[in-house]
Image 1 (cartoon, rainbow, N blue to C red):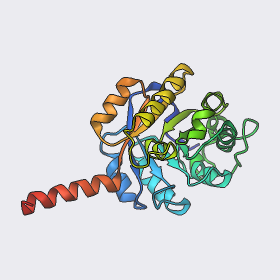
Image 2 (cartoon, helix red, strand yellow):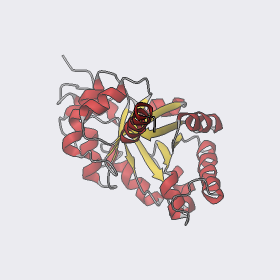
Image 3 (cartoon, helix red, strand yellow):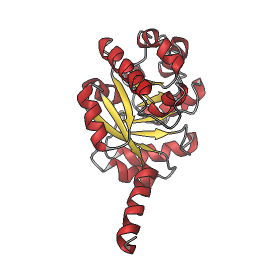
Length: 255
């Protein structure tokens, strides 16, 4: 008897559109478990700016599993080993930062696919129920999601080729780094940055590629989804905790 796959289908969620998630940056499974029960559509675990690494990712994914929530892991670098570790641990896909060109996108996509479509290594890890899910190898290439981040001026210049790269399943706009790349660090609402964001959205929609964006509030998420973005990440676990703690302190102290 084969075990059911550990991996929830993030690719189908993004293709359907209207998805909202948040970032997990704390390396504590309880934090992820609490967020997974909040009614969001997916979670994005941060291995770039957060402290989650290959060792702590497994317990976090296990804590989320009971909720059946699609979960992606943002790797620190566009490297085969990092991407492979995340997928073997049971992530539904990876978010790859700082993709500047079609060549970068192709390298990321290849690492998420088993041969002959890609270069992912084969091993009986959590994603396949430690080898008990006999059908995982046949399904995996059509299941896991490769999401590349567009967050630099170089990516804007090679946008059409990135969108046409086989194996790229979605784009994620990083407004903060994009603003910095365009010379407007800390000013994500600068007109040039907003125009660049719209350029990415329009090009992705025209190419029938799901495109997401990171936003600051739930209201902003609703607005971006109404504009045609397929998904949005809102806030972070530590940001939500800080905001709630600050509000509690003000309420309790009257400050």
